[in-house]
Length: 264
Image (cartoon, rainbow, N blue to C red):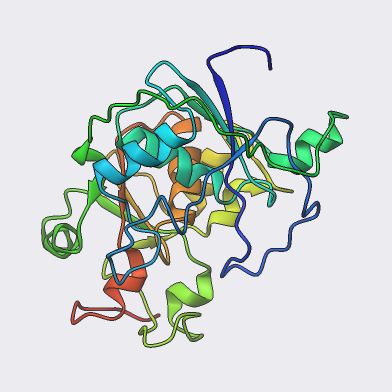
């Protein structure tokens, strides 16, 4: 905690479409700085939620948090593991790999007996000197996914709930069709977690196999809006699968477009 290069980021948000409730709302890890996924670190000009901000906006945002290229980032949230993998993904897309997710989040921190505070670190930070290198190979577009239906170069993995994937229940966002991308497979994000923590690598591998995911193809993860896709993306890396990407627009984009859908 005394390392001058260490930056702790709290990615907790006030709501989520998965219906999860924080156990320790209003408590924080000491010296944590708020990483605002919704209002700062998503594209404010996009009609889609949670999409990747511009390189310039990301650089400005993290510099304001005191982040530099030599910073060691630890990110957590108050739902165990939910928002924090998205933050990790954003840093990776921007070329910064020294970033870790606190497994189990705030709940795990408190369970381990560590102290908390009632306020985030809101002091004026010394401005960081972060310079991004955008790694476009980690992101795919709707057009990429559409062409992949025929080419099948990548395996598309939808991490929404099975009922949303099947199209048997309405989408939580208005104006979005129900169903899934043709030829995609379903692995709900909760299947790689246990009580808010990641399962062991062998159990993650088992969850993938039970979902029919046995291919050596690169994986493309998709969800409702690009958040929970990052949970399973990190799980796949924990289980030693490294050729991974995220469809950033996810179902919010696909489901309100003219792209084809399937229902089970």
